[in-house]
Amino acid sequence: MRVGPFDFRPSLWPTLATLLLLPVLVSLGNWQLERAKVKQELVDTHASRIRQSPVPLRSLLASSLPDSEMEYRQVTAQGAYDLHHQLLLDNRTHQGVAGYQVLTPFHLEGTGSPETSVLVNRGWVPLGESRKVRPAVPGPANRLTLRAMIQLPPEKTFRLGSAEEAGQAWPRVVQQIEVGKIENLVRHPLLPLVLLLDPDDPGGFVRDWKPVYGITPDKHRAYAAQWYTLAFVLVLIYVGVNTYRITRHPADQEAEKS
Image (cartoon, rainbow, N blue to C red; front, side, top):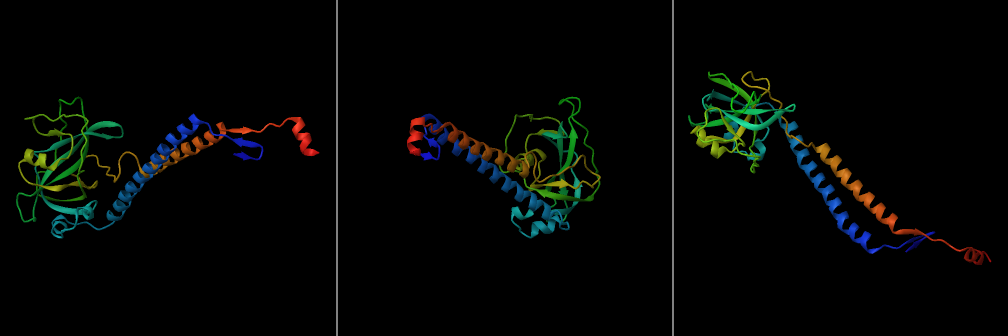
């Protein structure tokens, strides 16, 4: 194909390489945009619901709302902590420091069942000198009213390794929040949700709750832009290596003039 003084003649191997790589780069960009969309929805939902006034947990449970409508809702709950059966959620960091998040069962009042409990994430504590020495995780032993935000445990879990040991002393180390398994450990029913203790509540540790951890929506969009840019550069390179300037002999030029 001739365009002005240039001739575009695609060769086999550059064409095959471009046909192979271009869809991959574009797909990666699309995937990053999709991840950004999903996380942005979480951020927007979180921002909207934390502005709502807290409601009693027992009222929210009685309303039969779908789980998706409960996530990030601000609630209050009355009851008492079970400080004898606490758990340490492993592989949690804060500002680059390794540690645990403290999960404490909370025996609820006013739910229709005296045995109903819910896990309360009371925040992050540092690892300490070694994994053999568990950090001290004190808490209020009296009946109280707490304020928290609802979080739904992930449906799928991924384990980096198992630090759980049969018969280990309390507080026990767990790798993931798996309500069914934790029920067997604490030996009483648990609601299928977690309460993230309000940062202003004095009964917790370091709390910096976010709707999205790790890669933010803006970073996903930046990564998408990088993949699309690479795709564009690939096209430019393909055109460049397959385009040749047409050279004319002086005799041909003279013939054109005459």
